[in-house]
Image 1 (spheres, rainbow, N blue to C red):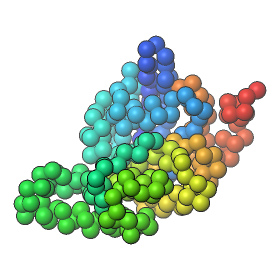
Image 2 (image 1 turned 90 degrees about the horizontal axis):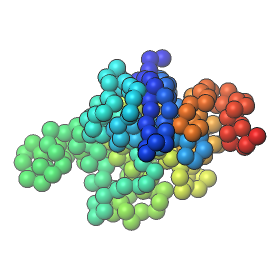
Image 3 (image 1 turned 90 degrees about the vertical axis):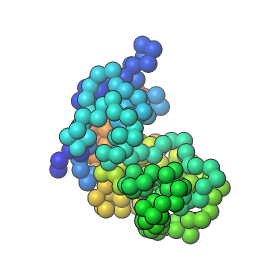
Length: 252
């Protein structure tokens, strides 16, 4: 399987503290790869480096063979890398449908705000965006929420809306930052099924997650960070048997 993402020697320090230290890895096309590690391991910093929120001190990030280190988040998203965040960040005062449509405007000729001028081309784009957004909501099983105000929904439903908005960007690679945070057991199981369906639809998934049962059930490959360094990489079974990983999680 070809690598959709290749990372070599990635490092980032904050005030003398090395958050990510010379990390190298691949994410293979059509797979679900998980990134795990204790709190403070550097997982979110690594995601921020990949998606352009922060710039690396050194190292390279190749996405579909294109160097993306140092590019803006918008440029990286336009190349086909979408991302969700630990903190839900939906637009207040907008419906679920409108929130998802914002993600689609990467793929329409008119921007979201120029659409307010109501030109014929923007009306066509608006129709396309509405239909496509509804299709995504149907795929995720929340189409009945389309006209509800997004930030009024229950926490788990808001997480699904954020996932829908990321999928609306039509990514080749989807970065999920702790998507099961705050979900109950039933919602987490449903999320696992959704993530596998997303992978099966042809989208590669790279996920940071604390819920080990979810990670072990859905991942093709797992990478473990500790104090900013990669300490292990392999299948779920290999990670479960890795002595260094067991030490990091359970102590000596």
